[in-house]
Image (cartoon, rainbow, N blue to C red; front, side, top):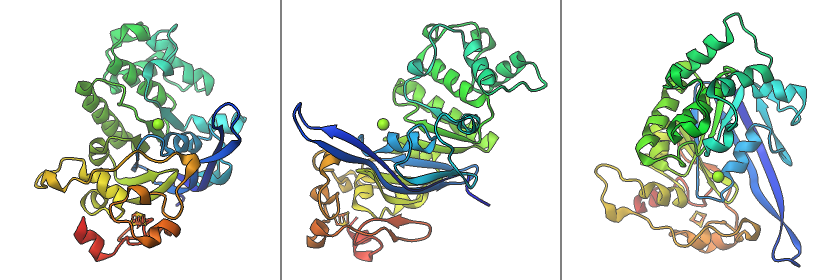
Length: 327
Ligand code: SF4
Ligand code: MG
């Protein structure tokens, strides 16, 4: 069976100019990304800001057009952005952004926000629309007396529940969540993450969960893809990524997540900031920050290689026992 979502060799290039008179230069924000999401599976996409995660998320929905490669849903190529085919596909793939206030229309009530996707996608159904609104509100933990409230009358957590409810109105197969809890108070982040986990489980949704918070990703995701400067540098089952990461970048990220039984001194501190994507270091782009870089890394781009069961990593030394011992 075809995967719910498949990306093959996606490329997204932006043009930037350094300074007012600077010459335009091309930035490969997403550079040859391939991934699959199966039905009922949660794929975490992690990496520092500027790694291309959000660009990738928009490309998976066809909001940003791929300049190379392609996205397939259920084996069919993503229709052109804005076309009638794309609009009908959007009912089945929904996106949840970081800022719920920006995602909601401030002038209309919760009930109207939730009815809107039914109008857009001309979904009638036999049950009354209001009954559907109420059913979805309850499923995301909203109270029915909140149906007449406006976004500014709700807390941040409640607003994000409205955004999630809105996404569920069209009964999607896939949710793409871009940092869905990072704008919320820490005290309510866990509630919203648990809600997403329950919905994913109960409805058998596929989910792409974009986040820089590895603790959340470890709890929520089945598989994890690690991005660095527009490329996936490691991908595998969440258990393996967290217990035996192969790529030095993943090792550094994972070492910052507290784990029972692991001494704090084993933390690997990442030196410096990620380089400007418009100024990609030669060889392995991670080499200026890598604690395991050798000569070859400075001039030869590492191939993505198999690094264990269902794991792949783009490092010259991935899968070598010595690397694992050093970690
Ligand atoms: Fe580090 Fe070299 Fe592996 Fe790149 S290829 S991650 S620089 S060891
Ligand atoms: Mg982002």
